[in-house]
Amino acid sequence: PKIKGTHTAMKSGMLAAESAFSAMQALPEPAEAEEAAEEEEEMPPPFTGPVADLGPYQSALEGSWVYEELHSVRNVRPAAHATPLG
Image (cartoon, rainbow, N blue to C red; front, side):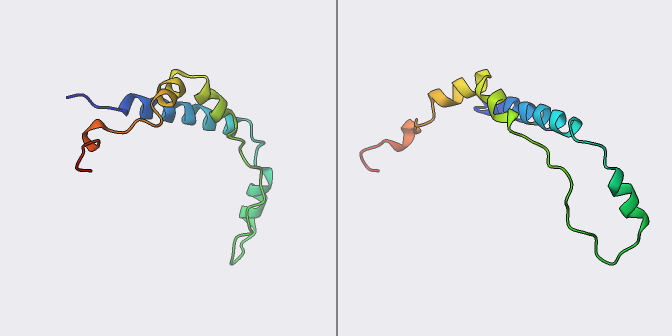
């Protein structure tokens, strides 16, 4: 049996993971987090740390074979539903 779409899902997930890993590696070390952990508070402070930039994921996806394959079939509907009976 043919499994459709699995290879594109896996490749897009791999690209997302690579982009997320690179973005997390680029973040600065959390020196303040260790100091705040030593002080005990009832409620933790709101998150004010750096945010990872995942923008490169879109360009990585658009530059891969996945984008070309998915873009070519973006408006294709299954033929089984195109019957005269609806």
